[in-house]
Amino acid sequence: MKKKFYLLACLPVLFPVAAVAQNVDSSYDDYNYADLDPRVSTSPDKKPERPKDPDAIFTIAYENDVFTGEDNNYSNGVRASYISPETDVPNWLEDTAHALPFFPEEGHSRWGFSIGQNMYTPDDITVSNPPTDDQPYAGWLYGTAALITDNDDRMDTFQVTVGMVGPASGAREVQGFIHDMIGSPEPEGWDYQLKNEPGLVLTYQRKWRNLYEITPFGFGFDFSPSVGANVGNIYTDASAGGVFRFGYDLPSDYGPPLIKPSLSGSDFFINNGKKIGWYLFAGAEGRGVARNIFLDGNTFTDSRSVDKEPFVGSAQVGAALTYGSARIAYTQVFNTREFETQVEPNTYGAVTLSTRF
Image 1: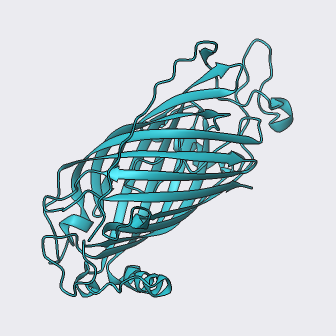
Image 2: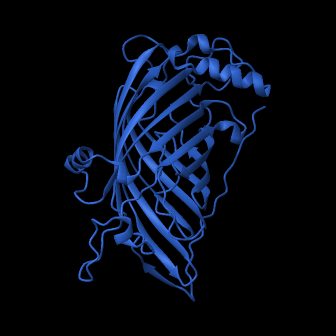
């Protein structure tokens, strides 16, 4: 019998008495701007623009419902990403970023790419012919190119994702190999997975960040609202949400990254002077869904499908730790039902590890 998991969450609101909460600039005040970037003015009549970050960031994200004892719906996701230094962006790409609609004219840009694979399975993976009203088997193997502009108060991201759904994604072989290694039941219904289909998704997302610091203790909190949209034959949707963070020496980021289409933070992070920092976070997002191939089925041929919910929501809680040039985070994600005949909402955990170099 499957275990049922219940969440009893209480998000405390902290009102420090002895401390003073003040809005702070998230630029790097400890840096010597002239030493790091001689093009930045240090005139006393004008606050200098923060220097360009010279480091790249590499991130590994792993998501799985094994953290909740389940093995259904969105079952597994893995993604590796690289984000360039701000000092390694060609002028033509920086000009392109500033010329894009909705992108800010100020701020520094980065480029990046990632590769990943997602797996989707029905509620009972031991059935060789799964019920037609359950989540279809599906795999998604993809690569993403990204352009990011950040001015410390706002981050805009444009992404182009291409990939393959179906047997060409390799999801059947990967899941079978992993289950053999760990002694889990063999998935029996992959013969009914979605058929091969190339995928294209265009993504735009904007996040805002307002940081407040509680002096003199080094604690701080911020709230990062966000809006975004995906357009393509894999996902077409629009979303709005936000993440609240509270911690010590909050790094300059927007929360830990997650694999889309979940509410995601940022792959990049920058420590603000101290070797160790940490934060707790909680967030929520609502999404209007026009298309989700993993529920609607193949675009150009017949396949398994279910009746999706047009509006879905998700909540997340977790913790992140930064130590020197590394950041590790754990996120627990709670989704509402995504299709009409779904027995229980999908819940999964996510571990992300990032390093600056």
